[in-house]
Image (cartoon, rainbow, N blue to C red; front, side):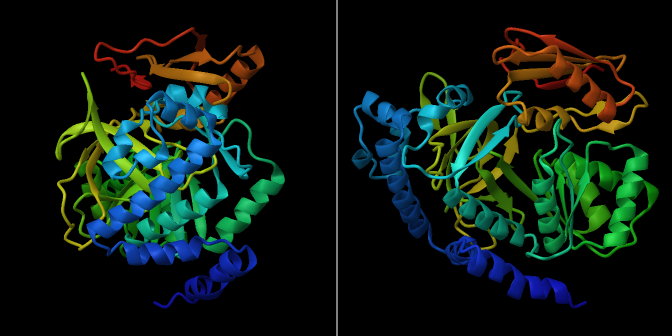
Length: 454
């Protein structure tokens, strides 16, 4: 069936707005990415090296933090002549990224986009990037989502996110609503996963007939299992793009049965956005190499690159964030790199075999309904300037103990607001807040952010 609006949006409305009116290079970058994905490995690495050297020269000249780090190691940007030379620079931990935020800011006067995240680590982080980086991020998303068949203007449902403590101002909400309406992006909160709520989502799918479902991996899997259990499917194939959490094989099987064979896993974080995405060959996730350098490293007695098939820590360098650079940033995720070589699709873009450490347990409200374990992660992204880290434990009686490590002091009014917010979105559950000086890791040295007692 012809989609006249989609064709009009892609051919006229979107290019006119993005390129002619706003004068953004997003679509130009996208066109370049569509060509470069078929480049040879040598060509891709040469591009990465050029972009890396430009970034490092900027960071050395304009950011106190990176200039100091270079000098401490007796280095200058001229010493980085190969991609492997990047390993001569130190890793940037999440704690250091927080403490040196102001020192990592470029003194070149670039307009910044301020953001915050808690990810799945339980450590909120305030960060920022410049507008030039934003255009690359959007172009990378257009290409990565395009591998799943998602084109601008396609009708889509985003089973995504959760409410924040304080919604944005009315003007910003109105602008976002208009943008979603023009792009035909319909957002549905995935926090509540009760059968009643999942039935409502099914009705939305029937009403909207989207071409694409974009979802948190576990939210999409819960929806798919409900569809399969109740025999709800009465729609043609819908492409599924999963994000935010690991997609397990059993989840993929449920999604395929509920929505068709087009299930595509992606990997990213708020700090750098889309890091990797699956193509239709389904042989791992292609890295966004034109925008990022992603390393998988093993730390022990010494730091070394992980071997193909070996689990390691994900380290990322954002090649186009000149505003507040992320250079060799430890994301807190664990991943396994795929063996070198081209994918069956023919692309030489590096690949991840899979990402570990991005799972979170499912909470339950007072009636036993499922609630996303990412609820608190999204909530504390808005409090990154107030809370250093947090940990959630749901007890057998369903009461929740929330431990908070503050930055400074937390007033009782904020704690009351947290309790009210929890009552609204996890009804029938008592939230007990505990302000503590630090959190204790388990015997393995890992900090489990969300734990549900069995």
